Image (cartoon, rainbow, N blue to C red; front, side, top):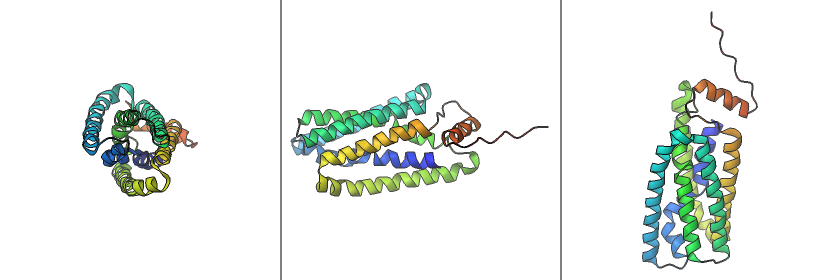
Amino acid sequence: MVVGLGLAALQQFAGINTIIYYAPTIIEQTGLTASNAIFYSIAIGVINLVMTIVAVRAIDRAGRRKLMLVSLAVMTVTMALLGLAFAADWSSGLSLVCMVLYIAGYAAGLGPVFWTMIGEIFPTRAHAAGSSASTTVNWASNFVVSLAFLPIAKAIGQGPTFWIFAVISLAGLVFVLRYVPETKNREYADIDRDLQRRFGRRPAEPAATG
């Protein structure tokens, strides 16, 4: 449950929907016109779709955990650079590159992999409850971040706001590295033993057969 709910919150609090929802506003503040901002936001949506398709095709070859680790590393770096670009008033081109790479990193890993993993980390008896709880936390986190982004950005500036998302992405990278097991081609019993070990608990002994 900790892994499922943690990934659900991380997927939203890492900042993805601030980029998707407010892309025209953010891009316009880089100095581009409103029409260009809308064009680039559409392009970002297309990149999101294309990289999601790539992730769906790669998820069974590369593995869930590896895709998430690479994804979060890319998201951390690009959010940090995006914050720096706004704080230092660098070129709009650099801001756009950072946004595009951030979207590509998210869509190639954390975005689709989360939905795959919540179907694999819960035992059969708790699958419905665990998946429902994770989905609820995911959408609740989406709601909170969407409401909070513009007020926070107005209060402290967009640069520091993106740095907050970079720190959350970095924390997520550590969380996945420490607590999230690989689920590719594994039975639930193997996943459960891995989870127990990662949380410092003794795995249950298999039942004896007569």
